[in-house]
Image (cartoon, rainbow, N blue to C red):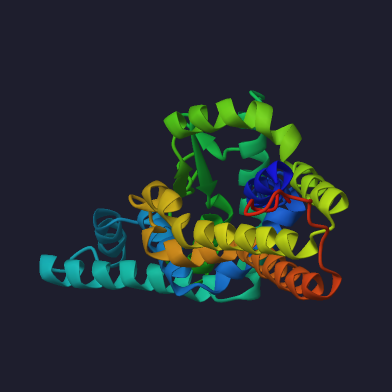
Length: 295
């Protein structure tokens, strides 16, 4: 019975650990996981606002308009400058709806994943995805592309240089906390799920009670479902002050898509074991009259 209880409680831990290792430590897998976010309206809007703000301000637009119309009255300058800002924002929105943006998004996320792993391993980050100790999504490639498109329409924007548009994903203090766990947990995450599976199999080998193992696996699937329903609360504070605040649901659902499938598979396996258990049965330990079975 001890093997059954421990195996049941550790199985969701093992599955979550495998999901985290698979999703966040492999660059190609991470990029493939977040690829669907390019279709999120909230993500597109957040990127459009961030890139627009980094490229041009109301004052910058006014200066541009005054170059075009040196003798224009102030009211006209303000009206036209607002139209310029609006047009730049529209250019960004047009870009994020194209296949080209999907490629730029993949590049930016590959950089941030590599930087995250390097930072957690106390290694120098390989890109500009770490600024002032914070892990950021660097949108420089998006900004430069928008700048080139705007120039083709006669709108000259300053070179971004080192002032690239960024969105903070994880703050420095949070990175320090994660690093303390990552240093010892990372080597275990990929294969830890084998331990609870072995415990459950050992329980069946000793008792022959497949049905109880099925109940244990079913409970584990319920714990996974509970994590999926409540885990978003861990992500929301990190994004609350960023341009992605409105996309928390989309980000969580995309990141945990693999884990959600794993939860359903676990549920199915548990249900199947219960059905099999009704036909296979289990060995009951001999007990005194009135005593409960030990198995």
